[in-house]
Length: 270
Image (cartoon, rainbow, N blue to C red; front, side):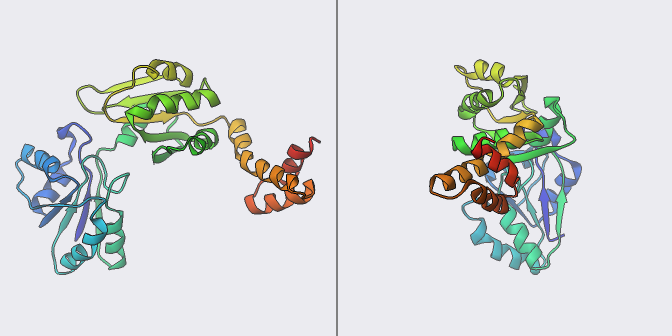
């Protein structure tokens, strides 16, 4: 295949697959975020390869050049510093460019921090949602935590873990959470508990290292109620501006898909 997207270890270098090692050994070029980081993996397994830096700051500039090389017969392996490229890491631009150019793309699966955390959390894994890094704006964060009915998996900065857990505790103090730290590494740790318990634990002692948060889904009633917060507010503002409640409710319902009757009752008190 012209382009092979290769998952690499998220901590333990022994977690790399045999297929990925073979691909890295045979590729004409290995694209990586940090050549020093990837060289450590390759040297561990006795592989010599031509490494080319490919990261969020240069991927758009390099995509066209790489597609041209692949059309000429070169084979390219794409890796990130840890885990699967494209998943909160560079690579999307290149994969899109290859597909648009009619070039085959092969994905070699492997380690995933999101999947490892989900399984380790002991929370429901039949329906779950991965959102990358959590929103920094408090309003967006509260909306996400209030409305996500599935198990939520997200990356978070150690500096923001305490604040995120405190925000969740305000919404639902009993919501089950797992704080997964340094997965597959020497100091791996999975701490499980309620939002209130973990908010208290990390309030004065933020965790260190790479963090994945796994949060139980919002109760169905709470998620449904939170889904109406924004439409209800829109109706109230229209009414305050002079619109009739039933007309305002119908207009907002048409735009959002919410129930016009529920919106009307919310603002009329009936």
